[in-house]
Length: 224
Image (cartoon, rainbow, N blue to C red; front, side):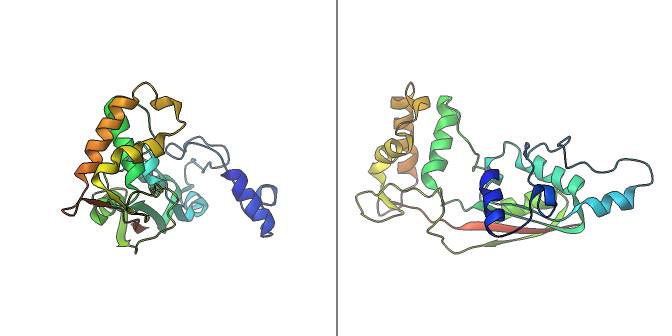
C-alpha cells in the first residue's frame, strides 16, 4: 500500500519522501514508538517545541478493526502524536456490514485458524464513541448510508440472485466461496464449515433471509 501511495503521489505531482512534502513510513501502527522518522523531542523545556512537531490530524481508514488492541493503539496515537485541539478521524463497519468475513473471523477463533481482524467489539456507534473518549478525545460518531462498494463486502451471489441477500441455508456455500484456495483452512474445513453454517443461520430474519448492510460508523474526535 505504501507503493500504491507513492505512485498516486507521483501521478498527482505531489512531492514525496526526499522532497519532504509527503513522507511515507513503514512500521507497526499499533506500536509506533521508536519508528525512525517519527521521533519527537524529549528533552527538558521542550514541551512547546515538541507539541508543535505533533500532527494536526490523524486518520485511520478501514483498518481499526484489524488491530488486536485498537483502544490501546488509539490512546497511544492521541497522547504521543496528536496536538492539543487536533483531530482524529476513523471508521469501523456497522454490525450488519461485511457479514462473510466477520463470520469467518469468528469461526476462525473457534477452531484455531488465524484470521485478521476483530469486529465483535463494534455493537453500535456508541462502541466507537466510548473508545475515542477513552483515548482522550471529545468525539462524535455518525452512521453513513449503505455503501455498495465496500471492498470486503460478501460477494457470493446466492439463490436470491442479488448482492447482500442470501438464504439462511446458504452459509456453507458462502464459507466455500470465502475459503476457496486458502490452505490454512484445509485441516479444519469440515468443522469450520459446520460452525459457519450455524452462525450464518443465526443471522437470518423471520423471512429466512440473511441481509448485509454495508454502512460505516465514522468517528471525529478532538484532543482535549
